[in-house]
Image (cartoon, rainbow, N blue to C red; front, side, top):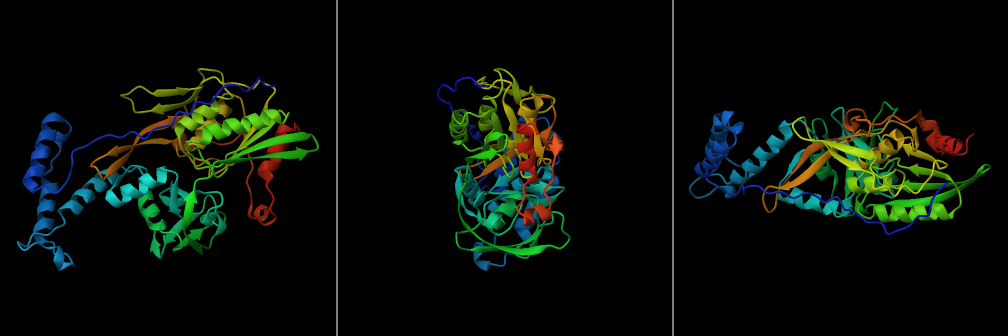
Length: 413
C-alpha cells in the first residue's frame, strides 16, 4: 500500500512579494502633476487618459472643503487633507477594478494586515469574503470566539455594530470586526437555510491560527485515520508530514483528510502536501496571469509514497477555500481521492502585496488558480464527487453525515 516515508521535509514558504512605488507624500499639486507627466511619457496607456476631471476635483476639495476640526487648517487657510486625498484616490483605483481582494492599505490598515500574515492577531477568528456581493463567512477558525458564539460557514453578515454591510469591501469589514482582546462586536447574521437574521455578540480575543490534529476512528471494518487540517500556514507542511508518518505507523490503508472550514493559506503548503500522493511532475495547480503572459505551473515534487491500495477521501464544504481547493482539486482530478461534502467556496485567486510607500501597500489580484484539468476555482468552486449536505436537524442531533459517508467509502461499504 505504501512505501517507506523518508527524508526531511523541505518547507518552501510562499513569500509575500514586495514591490516598490513612488512615495506619494505631502506633495504640492504642481509636483504631483509633474509625476503624472512623467508617467504619461513612459506609459502609452496613461497618456490616453484625461486627468483633467481628477485635478479639478482635487483643486475644488482643497480650495472649498472646510473640515469639522478647524485646528486642521493652516494659518494660510489651506486644508490639511491632501494626504487623505492621496490615500483615497489610490483606494478608489483599487476599488474600481471590481475585485474584492484587490485593495489599498493606508498606514494603519497596512500594519494590521502584516500582523495577520504573521499568524496571530486579536479579533473574532473567522475568515470572510464576498459571495454574490454579500459579506459571507467562509469559516470560523477552530476554537475561535466566532465559533463559540455560533457563527458557521456560509453565514451572511448583514450588519456590523448596527451598520449595514451592503457594498462593503472585505478589508473594510475586517477592520470593523477586528479589535482589542476583551472588546465586543455585534453582528447581524443570517444563518444558511433560515429566513430571520439573528444578532450575535462576539467578544474578541487573541487568535492563534490552528493547523491540524489527528484521530483514529475504529469501525467494524477496521481502523480509519483522520487528519483534520484547519489552515495552510508556514508550518503546515512539516506538521502534515508528521501526521502522515503517524498514519503509516497506524498500519491502516484508510485515510480521510478533513478540509471542511479550512479557509486556505500558503500556496506552497498545498503543493507540498499534494506531492505526498502524486508522482513527480504532475500538475497540482496553474496560475493564470492573463492572455498576454505564460501560466505558472506548480508541479508535484514526487514524494509519492502511497500505492494504489490507499483508500483516500477528502471532506470539503462551503468553508473550504483557497489552498484547500487546490489540494482537493489536484488529488481529485488525478484520481487519488474521492471528494465528499458540499461545494467549496471558490476563492481561487492569487494576491501579491506591493509596497507603495514605507508604510502603505497595495494588495493586487495578479492571477487566477486553475486545477490540473484547467478549471477555474474562482468561477465555480469545486463540486465533490458525492454531495452530502448537513441539515439543521443533523446539527441539533450532533450528527455528521459527511463523515459517515466518508467512512463508508474507505471501508468499501
